[in-house]
Length: 89
Image 1 (spheres, rainbow, N blue to C red):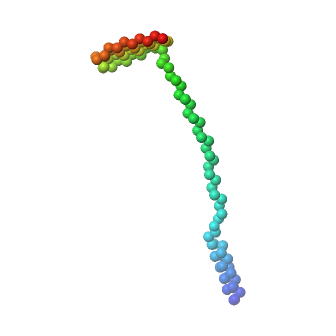
Image 2 (image 1 turned 180 degrees about the vertical axis):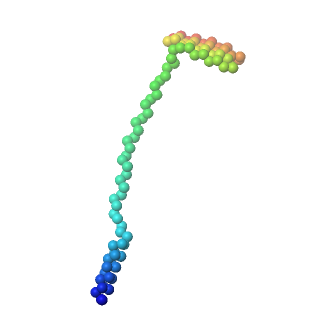
Image 3 (image 1 turned 60 degrees about the vertical axis):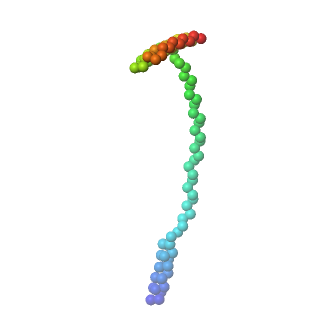
């Protein structure tokens, strides 16, 4: 009978020891790979005024712009102002 009590006590101690919280040595999480810096934005292309005619009409008046190569003409007619501009290069 003493053997059974001693054996039960040893078995109980082993169970307590095995159920004890164990600290698991987990390796630290690896940081995400460093992102390469974004390339600088491409410069915006220079937009030149295209050849052609532009007409704007509203309640204030009329504006006509004409460009043909090096020649440029601007005509603006409103109630308050009358303007004519011709550029030739």
